[in-house]
Length: 282
Image (cartoon, rainbow, N blue to C red; front, side):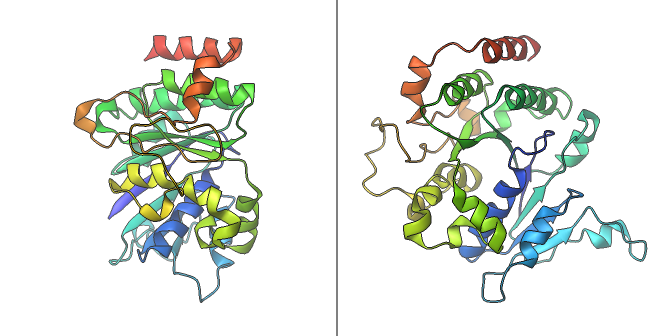
């Protein structure tokens, strides 16, 4: 059983979107995912309640709720048949809470939006994971997701520049798409939507799935993908998979479509300042 924690102390970074769609992906592949919602807003629980009996099952645990009639361990019990546990964490998590939240986590996903505030919060979050939770870089357990991005914008380019300074792999670049809004309203995921509607969104999960599972899912590969090692033009295609071997200590995974932007990105004083502070601290 794999435990995946979706974490970012800043609200609105897209943690629930990542968690629910990840649960949807595993469910559509015949797995038995468990969605554990620690956020008092209960967004993941509400999403799960909207699902229809005909949809692949996803077990949900309202971890934020307190039930005096049962013990905490009984309330948080994981079904024996569970294959993945996806933890949707609350906002405003304090650094001292990170060791407990990330304990036994096989992978930790940190979604970040392309804005000055979110970039600054992400830098602090990564620093706390490394220094407070004491998660070694070489274990390859921490991955960053550039979320709700709009390519060919200066802020997107600045975000990619910043993420490459962290020494943490960028495991996915998720575009700003209305399909995620529709999926949230319907209690479904982009992986369960009709392919002609959500194909571009689904393909962007390929590198993330590969990083999480260590195995590529060919169904997430874009049509006409170039051979491995070739440069892919900028556009709506997903990034190539992040490095899978922790022992190789490879440099951060780079999305092919982001490389030209990174090379030609205009300097962004706020982002460059945060990058310098982060590098000094870590």
